[in-house]
Picture 1 (tube, helix red, strand yellow):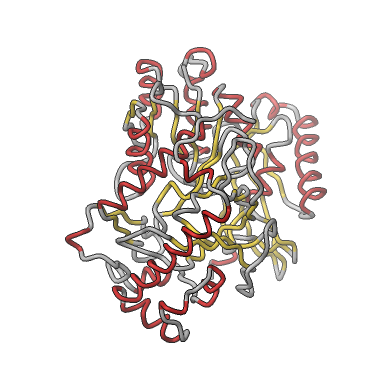
Picture 2 (spheres, rainbow, N blue to C red):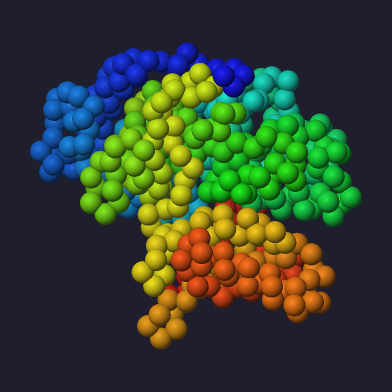
Length: 437
């Protein structure tokens, strides 16, 4: 048994208790959206479904999926089930690919959100003795505010740093005795580099114990890098603004997958091509139905994230279903000469090659009718650039590993340390020039 405090009794429900509560909340959610969201009511009518038809959890499969485009079509408040006067908080996506996705929360939604963050902060190790520095951007993005209120509920001292201004981040960590870092994993690695440039050894000169990372996918290799550079215990958490923001799931210290708060979210795994619901342990696209959201209930939201579900009891004592680490997205999978590859798989290969760092960029383009891929990877030691033989040997090693593990032939460019772009938010790792006309 992994020693870990459990915040809520619901995290240890028996399966029958979960299913009873889920069905009750699902029926209320379907009724609420049917009565208050005209767009969803029409979709349900077209599918021949009325709220009374939901008699078992399996009946959920009769309900049509919700996709991101449904939010855009109903911008800004068309999917809200509560009057605007009952909404106490708005958030939105960046809207870089069109109209932003707007979400809202009632007072009760805010209370639930805090509760769920308190759960995953606790399972990661945070207590009221900790000082948590939040390096997500404060604003319309849900990450910073979501973590903020939940960590305060635990009793932790919260430092609302926001993202950027990295040297000041390090200074505050040192002066305030920060024990918990909240950021994207790629920004955590960047901050570790900056700390060393400032003459500060993150493992010796700072007090970090815990790292709660999210906002982008990461691999076990990246976790090892973060743990090693910071000397902390890194956990990953998951969420998205359409569902609640952070708080859908998070890792405990047993690191056996992210526990889904399934008294508030019902997960399914589907075949992304056919929509067929898959069984336990099968890999496919995660679909989530919210079970308690008042302002913005969502039925069967296709997250595009590829994962699997596991129901056996965890070593930490929790009984909630766990989702495996996100393997990629159903809409950013690269198909290279018939080989399906996720950027996260390339990252995992790179992080197992000694001599290269965790920062990289993938470029995909067409040469004639063929897909080609280039991977820019940073060296750890710039002195290698002075030795053609050593550089060539390392280059061949990276190419060989990509070919052996993933079956792809990539051009590898080894570049100087700290020459690739750093990201304060989500890292943009792939430039797909095949889409450019």
